[in-house]
Image 1 (cartoon, helix red, strand yellow):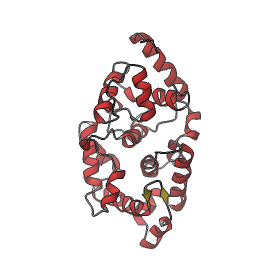
Image 2 (cartoon, one colour):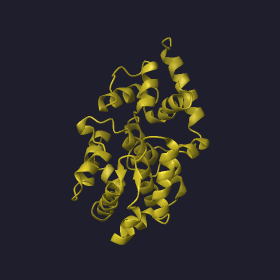
Image 3 (cartoon, one colour):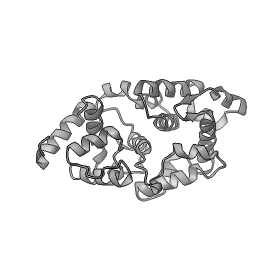
Length: 254
């Protein structure tokens, strides 16, 4: 497509954001899982688990994430804090692509450690002044308890170059706050201005077609490049345009 002027690109992104940042978006997205809850800890735990398995077919992601919270009796925080060894066995047949019961058992125990020893997820993520260091710190804390080596691949780390799409998406859910009703905005200790755009195949392809991303790999450097360009349009809330890029890529095959 022909290059747009800065003003045209801004208007185009705003229109797409306005279209997709809407409550109707919730039912077709993994964010529908934490929307089942009202307690802060239930929201963040179910959101983290849903985001962790958010790759592949969206319907399958949502169905499998629902199975997780059903097995937790729709009380994720209580389950994380108190589940016995026998109760953890309820997940023994769970599988989403390469994420299985071995990984899930560790996730539960690591989250328990995070709430009992580190003050909870928000406190861990807010220890650092920038998101890259926050993601690295979270990874360090998450794997600070004995764990199967195989599970490390399910929690990304920008220190290894990962775009950390699913964690950045999770942070968008927790941190962004507007009147649209999609994102939660329940974490007050992190500014939305600091967030990075969740970068995946869809948003990356759209960003390149819009000349907002030159880097060919979908890695952390690409996430930085894209977010830097999005901040030119809204420095206080750059990742609101994730709705635009993702919506254009998934729903309109832009």
